[in-house]
Image 1 (spheres, rainbow, N blue to C red):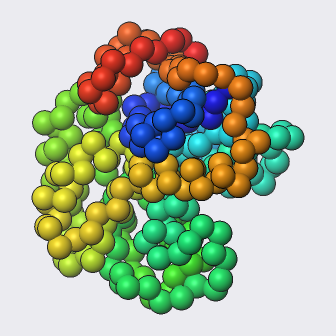
Image 2 (image 1 turned 90 degrees about the vertical axis):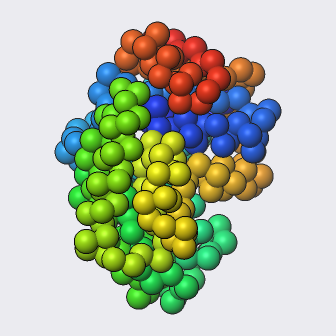
Length: 270
Ligand code: DGL
């Protein structure tokens, strides 16, 4: 059955949408842990427990491969889950590495020593838990030297998007970009390090200015998944249709998802 795509809520749908466009014949099972969203204000142990439970559920649905389409879960739980070992034939992957490979101009799996890259001043916008984990800086340090990263924890943005309050989300994005500018007046590039943020990409770009390159994950993750599946076709399990599961109220989450993707999405209770 398909590939599993996990997020705390609606944000991972940006990744699901890009994967569906890149791999139209690939069935997907989406899992939104809406009852426990947002994750970004929780501590690392809590995020690990919730993420592990969701991934195990997707494995039990027959998904051999699960993508954590959530930076917060990737930052706080992925390494711990991989180090503890995953069941035979199952895999779990995060969303950080494809982004950092794009930023550092690397091909997939290029494990050569860190080197100087073109961008020198990078703004990272992410949830408080992702910022606190410093996982982005750690992954970047394996691949690049001399890059100055200023991280801005974007409190409230995920909640506003989940509530469908886009006016509040926009105001918060502008104020977080202002706060970033006070610490780093002239970033070369900006990372949208939360899968909810691509829905606000135009606002980030407008607030940052046209000369700042904004990196957003969805397409990078889809491309990297397509690449991975060419090498690991065994990771595709049986199943033919997409499914959407949530720990929250399926009707409410379905309405939010329909608004988010601008096409009808029907959720089942997980
Ligand atoms: N989409 C999740 C991420 O990429 C949001 C986390 C949250 O629930 O706060 O970080």
